[in-house]
Image (tube, rainbow, N blue to C red; front, side):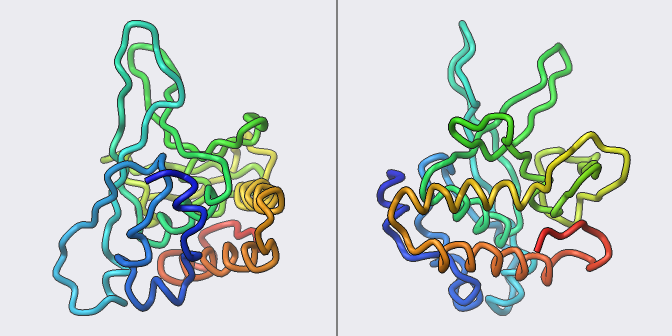
Length: 209
């Protein structure tokens, strides 16, 4: 799947997810490799939307000398996956990178071309992390980025609202692409609202909207 094909596909809206989330996510951006769903035998699409797991393989952000390209499998809530797909509809990308060293820990980030200083870890987007908020990852599985395994604490070094920054870059790309920016941005925030209704305690995150 090319990015052009995804960009021209219908918006992934809350309504489409509620109707049939598998169909809504059947077209993915190029960076999201081999998307697949868990099989938990839910009786309804609504139950699956809240509890199913989307797994995608995400490549490293840059090649390393002497090492072949690698991809890391990450687990997401279904609505989280929809948000990441939409944030990269008109540009931007997803990538895995590490902090170096013998005990390197990998991170999954949404990357903004030409604005690397604003790159966001997915866990901050999932939890709606804001200023000075630190996101604590699932200690048992750092590749599981479902909201239920993440939490926010104070004392972080972040000086930006994760979602506000991501949406600003996404809508700027939409503007350059000649898309309906108002409809596109409205849908992004609608997806965040749906996500938090499904997964977050209203007092458990610093929400951006």
